[in-house]
Structure formats: structure tokens, C-alpha cells
Length: 234
Image (tube, rainbow, N blue to C red):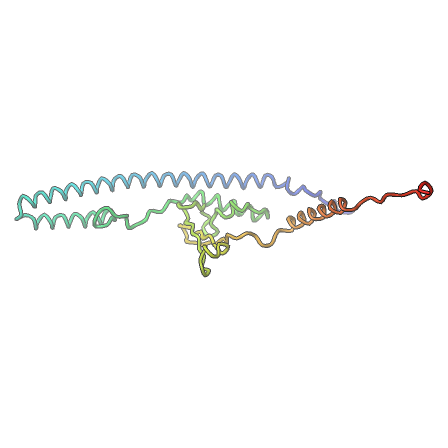
């Protein structure tokens, strides 16, 4: 007996549950990562407030030391040495500049949720096993090396490079968007130019449109032939 051929168009309907699962995993990983980012920001605000308080306390102690130096010049040397030791201790603890108003030496990295990574890796595995292509936005928002969600200015750094002569002013079509993951350091480059070659479906659509336009123009240009009766004309 001959094998029954499957109907065309049934593949998309059969993969609806896979698409729903992929979208659910992406939303869940995004939610978990956003929660971890908000927690890290709140911790950073608390640390910033404590640093501001430390700076104010140091400024007050310095003012008191200056007043003491003006009143008793004999004790100026001891006061200076005491201030120097406290500044060094505060720098060692807080990681601030000696002046106290600079930026911290160690940059804070946003904590990446392990569960978010696991869900993102499951999403990629499902798409590979089912041979279902992920949308471009979802595919580019996940790191290929560590499966962490790439959020600009939090979990990744985005820059634009143009090593051509003249730069982006003379050759803007040579711009390249560079995305660097903060957790693993993986770098991915995306050219910012338009696609030169179209897909097969788009080519066929354009060919059909051109054919329809040519047929309409031919129908409009061709004039009908008028039949003349020779007997009536005489």
C-alpha cells in the first residue's frame, strides 16, 4: 500500500505547543533576570548612601582637625598624621580615591540568575531539537556561550565600531554593532547594513508583482481593432 502523504501546512499547526513553550521559557528567564537586576540596583543604592555618609564624616573630621591646627600649631603634626592614617584606612575599606570624591575602583557587576540561564538553555535546546528557528530578537538577546540574557548597560555592553577610513561619517554603511557579555566576555558583532540578498519567498513575491504590473500595462496599451463592413461602406 502507498504511504499516506501528510497535508501541506500541517507542520505549523503541529508545532504550536512548541512555540508556546519557547515563548513561556523566554518570558520566565526575562522575568527572573529583571528581578535580580532590581535587587542589585537596590543594594547599590544602599552602598552609595553609606559611602556618602562616610564622606561627610571624613569632611567633618578634617574641618575639626584644621580648626585644632589653627588653635594649637604645636599639635599640627600629630593631627596631620592622624588624618593620613584614617584616609588610608577608609580607602582600603571603601575602595575610594584618596580625595574621597572619586569613583570606586571596583565596578559592581549585576548578578545573573542561574535559573534564568537554565531556562534560556532549555529554550535553545528545544528550538534545536524541534528544528524551529527562534525569532531574531530572542536569538540575539541570549549569549551563545553562557546562555545569559543580554540586557544593555546591565548584563552586556553595546558599542558601535567602524574601522573604515573616514569612520561612520564617510561610510555609515560599515558600522558594526558590538555586544560584549559581562559574565563570560563573549563578543558578537552585527553589521548594521541592509540585506543585500533577499530570501527566496521575497524574490518570488517581487517577481509576481512585476509580472502582474507588466500584464496590466500591456492590457492598457493595446487598443481594440475596429471591424469595418465593406458592403455598407460602398
